[in-house]
Length: 93
Image 1: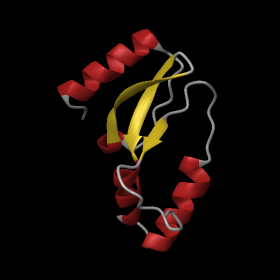
Image 2: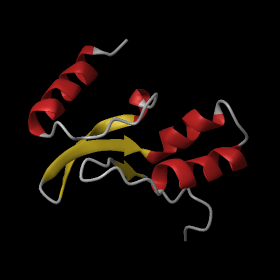
Image 3: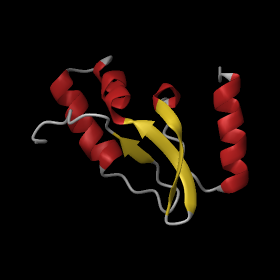
């Protein structure tokens, strides 16, 4: 079930960009909206996404799954943005 805040965000996003992509089962990782090339898209917290995936797989598998299925995914102009507040990915310096 969606919180009122998230439901309101989805309603507003539908008005601003009906082509914006919502990543399935990751609603708890949504930070808000942002603008990319003039289009409103969802903004996700990357740390929370990794934590979400780690609930059902090892950290290594979660990272690999994230890289191939989330970070490198492109869904057109509505593709969400992923924010990392700190350098949390392996290899980041």
